[in-house]
Each structure stands twice: as C-alpha cells, then as structure tokens.
Image 1 (cartoon, rainbow, N blue to C red):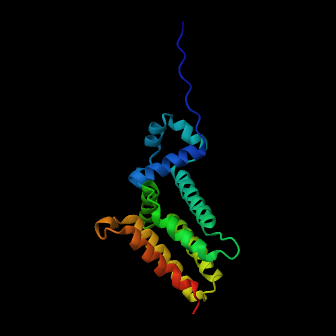
Image 2 (image 1 turned 30 degrees about the vertical axis):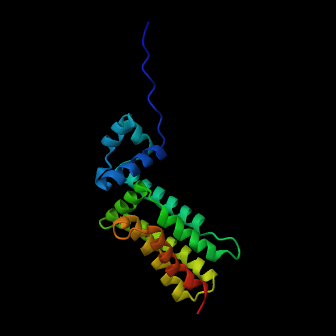
Length: 195
C-alpha cells in the first residue's frame, strides 16, 4: 500500500501578507524575507511568486493591509450616533487606552520605525495618522468646539493613547483606574462645555 503525501496547504495573498505582518511585529521590516516566510508557512517559495512579483510587492501589500485595517477601525470607533458625540469621545478614549494588544502595539512601533527609513511606509503612516486625527477632531467638532480646539484635543487624545500603550504605568501610580478616569476627564469633559 502506497502512502500518499499530505497535500500542501493552499495559501492566498492575504495569508502571505498576514505572515509578513506577524513577522513585522516580531522582527521589523528586515525580518520579512521570502525564504523565512515560506518555511514558517510550510510552503515553497513558488507559492509566494504565484501571488507576488517580488518582496517589494509583498511589502506594498503589508502597508496597504495595515492602512486599510487601521482606517476601518478608527472610522468604526469614532462614528457617533446623532447627538451622542460626547459619549463616543469617552468610548474612543476608553477603548484605545484600555487595549493592551501587544501584537498591535509591536506592529505600530515597527511601522513607525520602517517609516523612518522608507518613503512609501512614511506616506502610509502619515495617511493613517491623518485619518485618526481627522476622525477624532470630527467628534470634538460635533460637540461644538471650535476647529483649533478640536484639532488640539484630537492630538492630545492620540498622544495619550499611544503613550499609555507603550508605558507600564502601574509602577508609577497604584490607582490606575483613577488616573485613567482623571485623564479621560482632562481630555473630554472640558470639551463638553464649549467656551
């Protein structure tokens, strides 16, 4: 009786891109190598070339996938119901400051490091940041703040969200819940009463 070889997994472009994103989180952009990804995915390099013309094509796919996911997420998180923009501001601050998605943070850091050395990555990161700030600003505008204050508060919101995601504040102050509540109030509550 002849033993049949197990079928090789069929991968699509998205699977390769996701493997590259996972590698980006762990090793940065220099770790994204076709041979290494093929080995991790248990396929041959031929599978890669079926979906991508070269490594640069894969990297462009990584940037596009990351950008689309981040923009979709921020639009979803900042879309308020009519008359509920203030509640949505609190929601955004709570969701993003409570999230401890280690892999997401590592990908964010790797993207920013990559952007320091690559024009295409820099343009992608700038586009994502612009969307994040614009969507947050729209929430502050919806509660009646003037443009300059809405812009300032959206920048403050993201400075806090990214800062807290990279820091371990528990050793600084034992009452993290109180600290987060105070910060939330500093960013959002004064905004509820237009000046």
